[in-house]
Image (cartoon, rainbow, N blue to C red; front, side):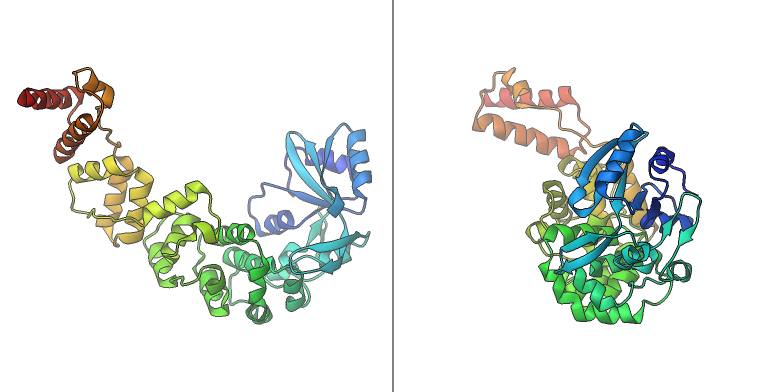
Length: 381
């Protein structure tokens, strides 16, 4: 049974509440559980009143949809009133409260996410989620086409859970419904799409899910022109679990605008696509020169993406990771102290000394570089 700090206080306030969703699924799967959500037949106002009566902080984070957050032992727990869908449009749902646990479970996406658990450890499983979890099957609750039409994001959520929990071939009904309903993804905001794509690619072994996305036509909608073979090659090299690196392997398309990447994500993705001239046989001087121009994460990312296989490339990446990035030791003020006026002459002199420093393997110190400047100034005189 899961025992996170603060849970006992939530249950003290809401003894009829049950754990729901991912916490129950992962508990049964023997996986670590970091967050616990609850459901309750009480209204949000009743939940907040019960919590406050026991001294718990209660925040109406989504009371119009039935959700409040209780803070206990410094941890937030979402508590959502049992609901049923009144109306859906593929993106949003109008809900009504209910006291029927099965009715609430019926509106969830997959059987493995539709289970609930009491404080005493009794698991309620109305749709065979426990058996599906044990068998490694990701299956929609009820009719797959209906669940997808209620919220098209469930198409991508299917692949996310298939990547993490699928242990055998995909559910045929789910695959057929996804292929038929894939165009509904075009209704979703790019932020929601990118959020789910990142979660799919954050799975330890996402290749089967991505290949299924391609087979159903979903991949072409979310990442046009994606090359699954390049992702397979990256994974074969043993690259770290990095969704952005995996996206870079999948497609050369500029995704900054399409997926509204953060500025940091967009900059790193663009940098990875730059030229990579290093080879496993290069000496340390060559690596230092490369690092003088590019950060570690840029060069190592390029090495994963554009390098080859084998021990030599693994050693190159390890050498890059351990090597301290060299920093050119001179700045404009150093030349100004020697009488060089700011302007084109200073810029050209700094550039020339830096070229000399790079050619020497980026090991010359400040005094050596200043000596180079003095010699140049003497020649000018």
